[in-house]
Amino acid sequence: MVYKKAQPTPKKYTVTVHYVDEQGHVIKDPFTVGSDYADGSRYDTRDHKPDTFSYNGQTYEFKEIQSGDSETGKINGSNVDVTYVYKLPTQPTSPTQPTNQTDPTTPTKPTSPTQPTTPTSPISPTTPTAPTKPTSPTQPTSSTTPIIPAQPTTSVVPTQPTATQSTKLPQTANAPQRGFVALGLLALLGSLGLIPRRRKNN
Image 1 (cartoon, rainbow, N blue to C red):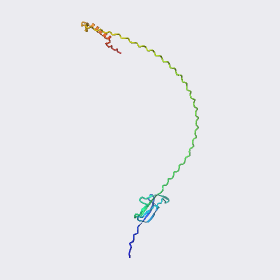
Image 2: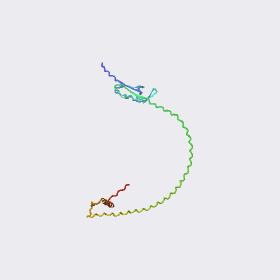
Image 3: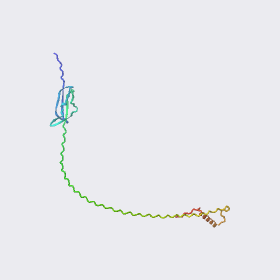
Image 4: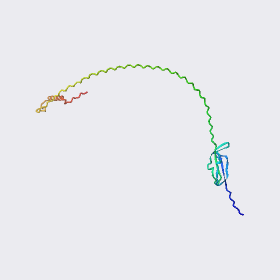
C-alpha cells in the first residue's frame, strides 16, 4: 500500500473594519470584510466606510482613518484591522433673541420762527469840507554882499647895515640905551610877522 504525504492546509487571514469616535469609543459593531484571505492576497475596505451613520440617536460623520492603518493593501502573514474615526457634526449656536424694540419718541413741535426786524435806514454821509487854500510862500530876503577885507599894509623892509658899520654894539653904551635898542628890534620883527602872536586864553 502506498501512502501519500498530506499537503498542509494553507492559512487563512481575516480583514475587519472598526468604527470609533474621536475619543476612541466604539460607536458601531465591527464588520468582518472576509476571513479567508490567503497570505499575499489583496484587500480593500473602502466599500465599508459610510460617510454618515446614526448611533444612539446621534448622527456621526466620517473624519479620518486611524493613524497606522491602511484601507487597501496585501495580507502579510497576519490579520488586518482597519479603524475608521467618526465625529459628531458641530451644532450651530442658537441665534440670540433680538431685544425689544423701543417705541420712537414723539418729535417735538418746532417753534415758529421769529419775524425779522426792519433794517434801519443808512445814515447819509456828511459833505466833506472844502480844503483850505494854502498860503503863498514868503519871498526870501536878498542876501547881503560880503564885505571885502582890507588889503594889509606893506611891511617896512629893514635896511641892511653897511659894511663899514660895526654889528657889535659899543662896549661903552649904558644899560638904558641897550634896552631901547632891543625894544626897537622887537617892534620891527613884530611888524614883519616874524614873532608869533600869543593866543588869547578863553
